[in-house]
Image (spheres, one colour):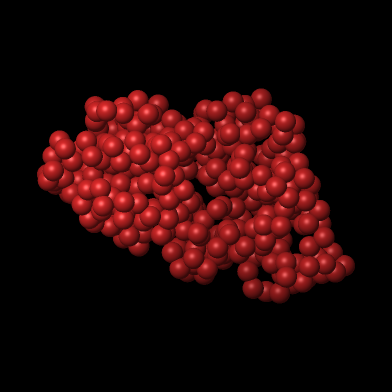
Length: 386
């Protein structure tokens, strides 16, 4: 398929998607890839013959990590090529997305890629926080989606979104964009409040898209294991106050029990290993759970005590039954981490405990209820493909 210079969709019999999934997977960052895997697995459990095009920034990595599901999945970065050229102002980026798609039949590098959208019934933005303050050029995705909807007459939807923080000055254009979507749901209450006045918003499913899977892929199931301190501190806060507080907690946990093993979990490839040298100098050399081992799963024990900053580390480790202490580097992470407390993660905010180990409580997440809600939403979204 490609869009010709005369704006006619020409036929190249190769791949015609039924669903387009837009996501931020492929860097990789574990959480983004797990979100995508959650969606793909559920789609093919429902319909093994459906074809899915994944619009992601690094299609090669996604292809290696997730495979092609027996030829039913393709990975493509066409929309992200437009995003990367967009202005870093939400309004300008939004308009840029519309104009660039309308002109894409003049771009030999893009025009044939959008031909895969010709027969798609649904373009869905899977869960994540990639349309918000700090990712202003990503607002081009909204303009692009609207232009694609106009061209191909497909449905638009979003689930498990984290839109906050967002500048209020851009809310009118944001509202205009989301009114073109048949369905929108959020993963946190601040994001829901931003868009709750729109009729397309689902207020009943405020939960992360990884609840499409019924249990934690990282839980080993092993009982009576020795306590370990499992650490995931991202590189961009290495010298921050939050990092210092978390290192202080590691010191206190080791003071309680020097026999506790230190483990560093590499949720984001390479970036989560920058803390290893400092931990080795301050305490002792940690064992490393590489990204590859995390991706293969079953590496966390219920006895583990987790200390870190990453949101999906908090989410998946608490779903594994692990106790934990989290730190929020900024407002965006604060919103994400705080969204897990009402559902029962029982992790403690390091900001509240500077000089002592907080009470470490086991999670009480209502798995069945949250999975049921998310899968009900999934069923609703799949109905948009018929």
